[in-house]
Figure 1 (tube, protein in one colour):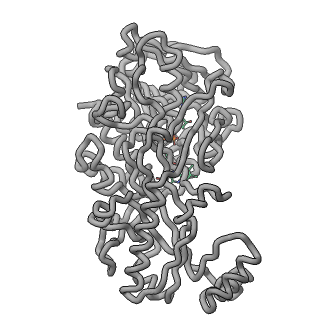
Figure 2 (cartoon, rainbow, N blue to C red):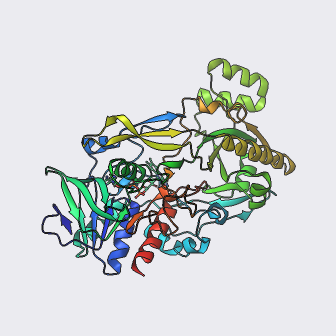
Figure 3 (cartoon, rainbow, N blue to C red):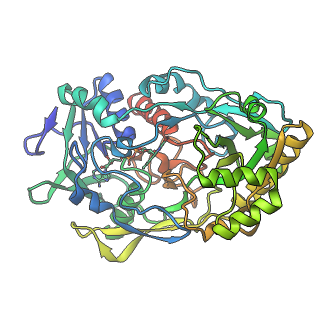
Length: 470
Ligand SMILES: Cc1cc2nc3c(=O)[nH]c(=O)nc-3n(C[C@H](O)[C@H](O)[C@H](O)COP(=O)(O)OP(=O)(O)OC[C@H]3O[C@@H](n4cnc5c(N)ncnc54)[C@H](O)[C@@H]3O)c2cc1C
């Protein structure tokens, strides 16, 4: 049911902060087990400029999206404008996670149902190449706010409090138990919720760190101290990285279907010590009317040196021909890629804005170089065509380019690990050294693979629901 205030509310067993895919999935699952939930959401049902402005922040390092608009602060969270591309992580993507692959994989079917994905995922299907296999991405476009609003409204067990920002969490004297939540309900003075049972922070892959960092900073005791909150933040560097010259029908046969990608085999990844990555090709569609740009690009195919010279005299852009090769790549978790709090910039409620420090490291360029060179070699061996690799890969110049080589995938910051100095949460997503505080979302991913994160977020939400109720 929708509630407008917390006065007179008999406090439910679970408080979930954040009504995006993670928080809504968890709330619905807990309801199925007849558990009562207070779901607190900062936004309302629609986009609101003022509420959205709480997401302002600064980026240092490589060029990145404006933090205010790389996520959405209203019911449904960023699923209000996500692409819906979904795939589970590969088995070896989660080898370094402190849990077993089957503990996540067992929720695949239910996750597909939630995301309304009908087809089976193609995983590591053999291809004509030795070092590359085929995997697919399926469309799971679900807007969580729209899909679940009526269910949340009708529910007798879920109390949905919208337009309410959680400001910070406080603990008991020894810092081990969350005992109160400070919040601001629209048009009301600040309030406090006491006598908590279990609290789950599901505010998204940047905001989870912000809320915990701020709670730690203003705490007068050991609450959240010595935890590496905000560290090991990751994205999926992605974009166009080369071109492929070959007969369209032959190249299309290699990729089989539009939603299929070439991924390196596990052996190739391990032997070459590279990150996981995926490649696709995108053909120029002529439609009978070719633009000057496309005609010039065709010229490059016929007379590469001459054509290239002409085009590069027109523009500074790197020339792609016949089809562009696109990529999305895993980024190794690095402690220096982190979220910290600004000392000078605050939101309307005087909470410090985020400072995101993000750099695409050598591991990414090494992976692209090794895998594209191998792909090029296997294109020749199999007489498929030729691959041209952009100079970006060799001189790392895309770090300086105007384009953004990223994906709006915010991972890490409160990662899951059994190692004390690395992990913020344990394998059950409980914040270390606390008894009743959990974090949910891609901020807990210890590694990110190259697949879009939301499928795994939903799997983790189902797993957490099971853990909290058994
Ligand atoms: C343009 C774009 C395209 C994308 N495309 C894809 C894609 O194709 N595939 C894919 O897998 N992923 C994609 N993503 C990422 C995907 O949207 C996120 O992974 C997903 O939404 C994360 O879910 P979440 O619930 O963890 O966080 P969010 O969606 O960020 O939800 C968090 C919720 O918490 C609320 N909140 C935040 N702070 C507070 C607070 N202090 N108090 C109360 N409430 C709070 C917010 O209002 C929000 O509703 C895309 C993202 C963007 C921006």
